[in-house]
Length: 304
Ligand SMILES: [Zn+2]
Image 1 (cartoon, rainbow, N blue to C red):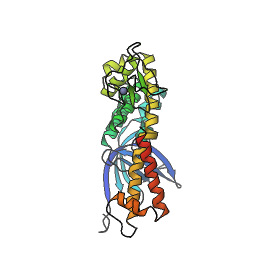
Image 2: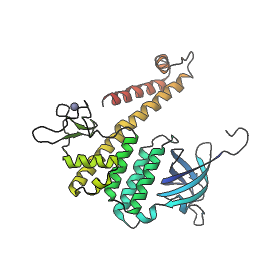
Image 3: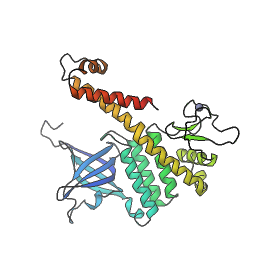
Image 4: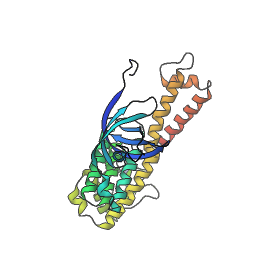
């Protein structure tokens, strides 16, 4: 890209998720961009008081950016504010904490840098805008953001049918109560019910569905105790799936790539990863590690 001597620049807009100090005057800025997924780039001199774009590169800010594609980290060369979502949140602590949780989970839901994540970006913009506009309660907005982020990642909790066997008959005939298994993936029928499953009320399950669908008329009318029960379940569900399903899936992909790459350095490397893995097993310790990581991660995947 830069072999012909031209400077490699690209533009994109995004939400600043996080900043970290770098050296005396710089910061590493983590941005969830519209087209390039999550990007970490250097903002040079942004910690100097006279920095022209330091103030634009603060968390919660929607910025239009120009990047220079660097050898390791890209460098931000221009920044224009599109909308500072942080300003209306700073005076309202519940809204601010919900917004902070959105920024943090948006980063965790995009574990691979520069992997396009436009739906996640649009969810974050919509969530921050709604928080600032005070359209709905901050905790409901956060739960809606989390549930839809899970859906985008392919891990929406099952609430219409049993997460294990798929039967729509999830209510206990005697009591009408339902079982919700975090690791199982949502509601379960009586025979698939895992030990330690939560037993949310029908209204709480209904609220979860309304938040997933964006049925705000229904969500806004829900009672505080059902909102609290929903929040607890959503938080536990997101936490578990970020630590297990989503992470291990990425880990499998990453480790498989490592095996494939290592195989290229081995003589008579074969074209498929399967063959390469068996060839390499007794060759280098690096590959052995990577292979066992794949097996371990695959075992975690099967466990669900
Ligand atoms: Zn079942």
